[in-house]
Length: 182
Image (tube, rainbow, N blue to C red; front, side, top):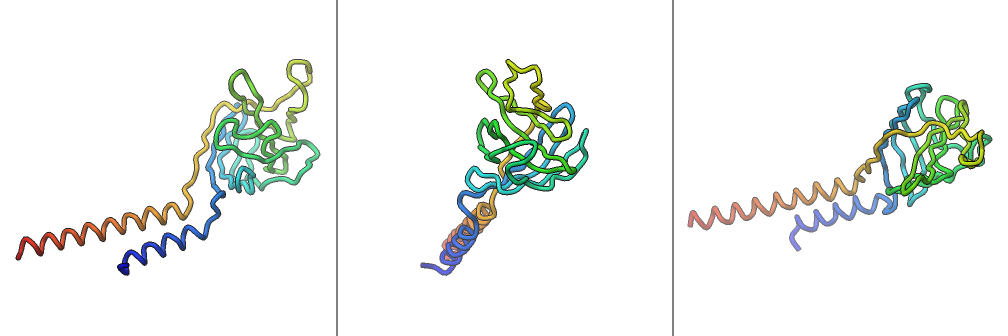
């Protein structure tokens, strides 16, 4: 095998072996009537392992990370799906500005509504909203985005692939040039 191909194969294997196959990073934004949130979550499988970001609106604070379970205000499973529902009814629990924040989903018709509640303005997702006048779900999330962030191994494979194409095209060009000159 030619040295350039061996080098390229080695680089791909080295980068691919440094990342977990089921780990993923997602950038997200959330907009509700009272909050705007932007941040990044890291998952292993569908379990959220970390969260960072910034709150603005009624609460201006940095996200301090996932909270331990059980929490005095909320419980959660901290599970994430890349398709709807993105979070479960128990949701994602994290801290910001000294408060417990919970983002969760509620089945609605053929889809899901998402809410953001915090321990300052409590939302109670244990109650049934159709039978309890005390149901306070928190803020309805009006919009947002979730975008997967490419892993380092993906970038490495892309760069090695372009380098390989460049080497091949240069070799063909120099071979064709020497045939024309002869």
